[in-house]
Length: 245
Image (cartoon, rainbow, N blue to C red):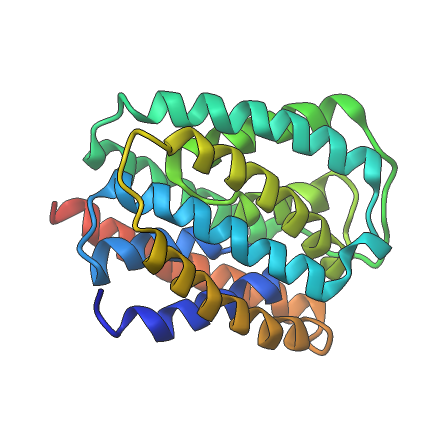
């Protein structure tokens, strides 16, 4: 692999620790562009990287102190079912269509994030919206190889967790579950380089320490704006990649 992947891995860790999102969204394009991987192999490897890095981040942030466990269980179980379903469905999608849909999804979420209003509150648990949201995000996790964080954070805010750091905490737990389920589904379908995956995840895990530090010190509205900017940049890159395939 090219050496450009290693600073990219550190940046991915910072983004994941800071926003509870963006790991797979950045990892998939990085593996495609810098490591010249086929789309499906990049997605499979990304799922395992995101699983490992998210687990390190959630332990470092001690997220269990602020979790709504009913919400975590509901989103987690429905997300796992959706992730496995999405991974199976993804096998039948042409790579260019897969990238095109991924790009459209990024721009749609960017618009959604810009409309969300943050508040220092945590709303009541709602079973049906949580189940539907978890399943939908799980499907997208399996299809596109993202942990779902860039969808989970806005979704969690919509479900009532409008305090950004608490939404990030929930997101990290759910990303780990969804990405793990998707990663297992890809085993046997594609070759995943174990050593490179471990090294990439190790460097990215170091970045989560920096990301956690920033999360605790940057105001929520600045985090929201930064999140939107990252999404726009990734959408532009993926648009270019899709058109040049």
